[in-house]
Length: 209
Image (cartoon, rainbow, N blue to C red; front, top):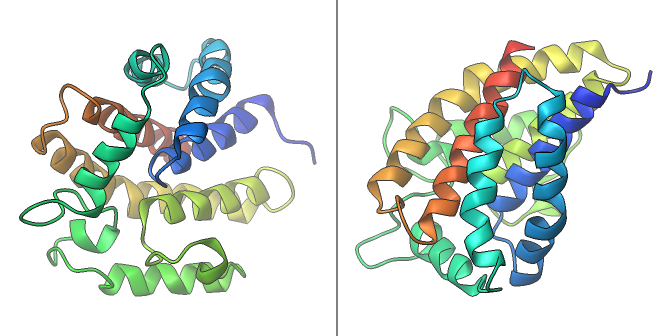
C-alpha cells in the first residue's frame, strides 16, 4: 500500500523534530535550514490539518542563525538547556524527568519505553546511548509505528496515535513549559521553544488520526 502525501509530510515532520532535539551539528543545522525546513514550509499549505504557524515560527527562529551561519550558538544553547549548566540541567530531554513522579532519569517511563522498543524490534543501543525515554528516541519510535501503519499494518497506526496522545502529549507539554521557564523567549533558546511547539503540533495531529 502506497503512503499518502499527507502522511509522508507527517513522517518528514517527525524526522525534523527528532533531529532538533537530538543535538544537531553545525552542518546538520545548515542542512535543516536550507533544505528540510523550506521543503516543509512549501508543502504545509497543502495540508490544512497541520497548523502552518508552527513550522513558520520554527523557520523564522532558525532563519536568523542561518542568515549569518552562526549555528554554534545553537549548539551552545543545547548544552546549556539539556546537557549541563550551573545548578543542574534546566530542561532534561527525558520523559522520566517530566512525569508526575518527579525528575528522575531511568524512572518507570524509561523502563516502559525500553519495553516498547524491544517489542517492535528496535534496540536502544543501536539508536543512541541515551535512556530510552529521550524525546528524540520517542519520536523515532513514533516514526516507526506510523511508517508501518500508513503502509501495510493499520494496527501500528492506531498504536502510534495512542502513543502520541496518551504518552507523549502530556509530558512534552510539561517539557515545553519548562523550556519557557528557562529563558528561551529570545536568543538561541527561541529555536528550541519553537521546536517544542512544533512537536506538540505534530503529536496533536497524529493523535487525532
